[in-house]
Amino acid sequence: MRVDINAVQRVYRRYAPAYDFYFGVMFQPGREEIVERMNCHPGERILEVGVGTGLSLPLYPRHVEVTGIDLSREMLVRARARRRRQRLDQVVALRLMDAEHMQFADNSFDKVVAMYVVSVTPHPACMTAEMSRVCKPGGQLFIVNHFQHPNSLVSGIERLVAPFSRVMGFRPDYSLEHFIRDTRLDVEMRIPVNALGYWTMLRCRNNKEATANIPPIQALA
Image (cartoon, rainbow, N blue to C red; front, side):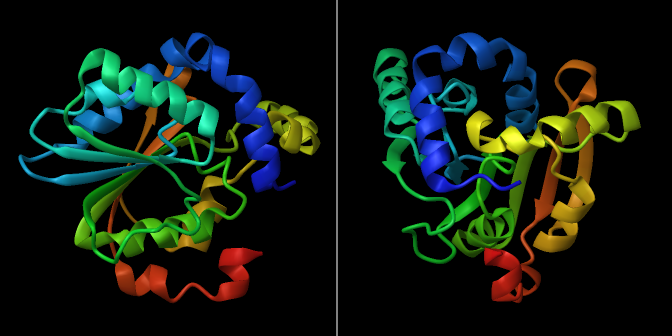
């Protein structure tokens, strides 16, 4: 079952007021892990795809420039309030934008990160191709997300609730192997994060040649 943009916007309009309460502490170890693994250098330009309410923004060092995008106006309102409240000067822009059709020039960022977004976007291969396009050649792409669990009992439960993806706003049964195959990501590191290692962090080298040649029907199916 796939989610669609309208469903995502509806769900996160509903989630926004309580998102930090329900998903803040639980997902924070993964956010901390991925920002630490990014090893940000002074002057680097970072793009965060699906920035949400901005829970990760205080984690970035002051010597980088962070741009965040999200599809939900309601989530961005809270991210902007967090930026003002915590005086996060490293956050240079928070923009309403579809991650599958980014309004940035090629090679705009040194590193691009997507936290808990892959199973939310309707077409993950299209989103990662856009991440690659706006990232500099040889740059890095970082992803943390839940993928279908290898345990047959857990994955069976995930398949049972999958028909409710449009209501939940994400797909609980999305296969990591299928994701890597379809996106052609050049994965350098793969580690479990958060409680019980239920989520996975990927660090990928930006291989533009591989992602640029994704057949359109595969990226947009």
